[in-house]
Structure formats: C-alpha cells, structure tokens
Image (tube, rainbow, N blue to C red):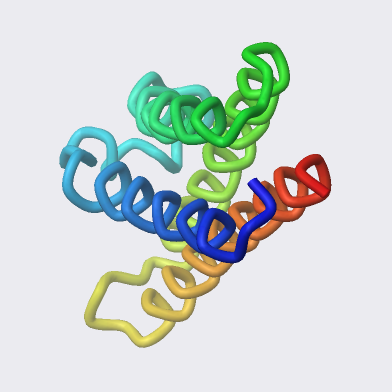
Length: 128
C-alpha cells in the first residue's frame, strides 16, 4: 500500500465511513444518550465506527489481529470523544442555537479526524 493513490484511498474510505456512521446511521436514541457514560447507545454508536473501520483496515493488508486492535482502539477513542462533547454541551446548557454548540461539534469532529490521521500514519508506516 505504498502508492499515493492507495494512501489517498485509505483517507477517502475513512471519510465515507465517518459520514455514514456519524450522520446517516446515528439514531436519535444514540445521539440523545452519548453524554451518559456507559449508556448502551454511545457504546453501540462507537462500535459501529469500529465495525466499519475493520474491513477498511483489513483491505489495506493489515493482519486480522492488528486490524482488530486498531478498530477497538478507534471504538474506545470515538466513544470518549463523543462522551466528552455531549457532556460539555449538557453541562453548559447549550443547544444548536448557541454558537458554543458548534464550537463543541467542530472540536468533536476534529478529534475524530485526527484519529483517522493517526490510523493513516500507522498504516503508512507499516507499508513503508
């Protein structure tokens, strides 16, 4: 996976995965309860991200065990990023009419993107 095309494809697939799991497949139940630590909705939402990441990682030639480890790590990170954002929104009493909501959402999305950059770096370093 050393070609620039393959490395670009990796990032594109993660962008598509993120859009689907974070926006199209996230239910109201998931979104409403992510700020409650340990609630099944947040775990399910983050698990969906990890489950969608696993085939991408496998497709790029990582071993099953290594891919699973990275997918689990992403699940844990995704869960805690979402939980922290939801908790901050709730504690500060903001909604989508408040500019602070969009600041929290932007920080949340940037943290997810940095997770993908880290995964990209790991995959690229293993391909070198």
